[in-house]
Length: 501
Image 1 (spheres, one colour):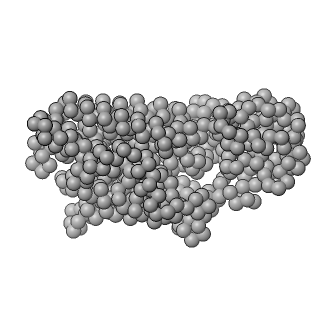
Image 2 (tube, one colour):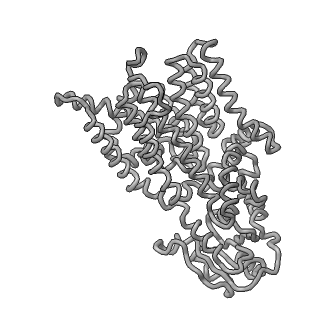
Image 3 (cartoon, helix red, strand yellow):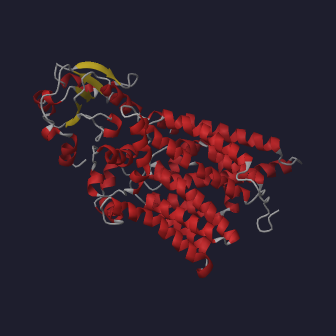
């Protein structure tokens, strides 16, 4: 037994524990299908990260307002550049360049499973197995793992980083301190609003040991931030200026408020809605886990508290906090189950662990299959179907969007065709479409505006046939014949600049 922690000492001579290897495989069995069958959770995954990477590969991409204002880091597009390039090289006319980045993210997320194992193993092997299994199968872990977003990348870096810092606190191994701090620094640069919460593990790890602890911690954190600095320099931009631009745009200019503002209790209400009656067991398990790791509990609560004070709220913003709470509940569930077994005069054996794993799987399925989470499984599919239908049109030479609510809608990475793109909207949209027929031969329009499209265009289908008319946003129409004019002032990027989108 480990004299410091009371945990079982790892066996020497093995590169990886076979049980951990099996759980990592289990995690992939959940993550790979999600990578293949879900498109994106939020538009940022495409337009802010995949699209710039695609632009670096092809030289052709759609630049949204936040790209033009310089409020995004180039680090994430550069990280995704290799899978985007490889996918486009292998399948230049297909969608492999969209799929490979999601698979890459899914592989990177396996570090969160290891983090659960490491944190649990510090207590006992039973705790390690349960924490790793929950990190493998819980719907929040599995669904968000393939997302090409700053939130997922931040979590994939921070959770293993926290596990390394906990180990550094126990062993004083400077490598653990350096790499743990490096991962937290990297996670911070991926999503800098997490900074106040990440200060908690730094202070907890460093304490007052300036020579032993703070030297590797500071060195690691600086190295993590330097990755972003190098990315900015490589793209010819001033280091870290994007953070200032982001704060100015979203806090001073309130650009984010255009996407919705919620009250301070919104995250609590959403979690209550998501967990529902499962919370009856989940909350006590979290309490037991928090007793094991109060620092992690404080970090999770700080993530939620800081983001609760920000007007614009999205569930993905508190993903780190939610996953930490779930990991704590996984660890605490072993203690809770052991206590229940003791009350019955029994010990928590292998059968008890299998039963507990089954309960976690059932709870995960329950959350995944009910509102509000169930909505996520269909996000992004209609736009992708629309672009597939557009690509399938014979003689495609130009595609226009007509009075589409969601702007931007066109992504060069998703369209993946070297044709001109147009954006038609506004009071004189019908007149513009009539006059510009020589510039496009395929158009995407909402069902409610199909009759405004010029008569030369024939209906090819709507992408969400089971939804009511007002939700049929993506219907494709096409005409025969070539494009005889340039996009001109209706060019998609040019219109985005004029409407500041």
